Image 1 (cartoon, protein in one colour):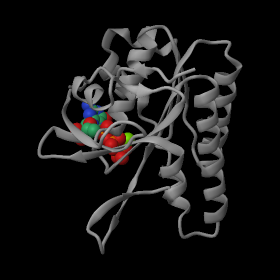
Image 2: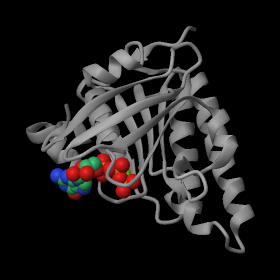
Image 3: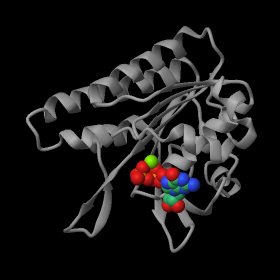
Length: 224
Ligand code: GTP
Ligand code: MG
């Protein structure tokens, strides 16, 4: 089956992506704190749930319901009936939450429209330079590989957010997760903060579209 597109509802982003997020593969979003990654995930998830399809949402930040209320407004209760939300408290729990979401998506009993893992690398980051770094890397690699396989098998878009580190030498913000994640993601978006409520999304990698960028604004009810 050829990939389909899931419109994000943000016109400039949908133009940049040739119609929206692709099914059958993993889309990585990286960017500094406050760049809008979570808001973007919530907004896309809201659109999916509104169409009565399920969203499997792995939330390591513990903020989604409050912030989903801002996006969904009076729709919140109806929307939550289509959310399978998990809030893992460490990387091992995150790995198990991802495995559960993958298994349910493949089982196909519910009509699933989207899997979100936000933040995909916050717990992983905590293990870097520690004794458990190798274990953490393995957990992350297994989770990402399983998400990639599930996206294809269940014909779904998967959104995976990634944090950044600052390269002092290059003066740039680089994604965590290393080359493995960058290869696993078929589409990579970088979110940049601009002055005030403006944000830029840069298409860093796509298998068929040219590199490019778009701008949006953070508003009280989401992204515009
Ligand atoms: P990290 O998770 O820290 O890496 O940031 P992010 O890229 O996920 O950014 P997020 O989407 O959380 O934030 C985007 C913008 O939303 C911020 O610049 C704030 O203006 C706003 N924001 C952040 N937290 C809240 C909140 O709890 N409520 C509201 N209304 N706005 C928030
Ligand atoms: Mg976030």
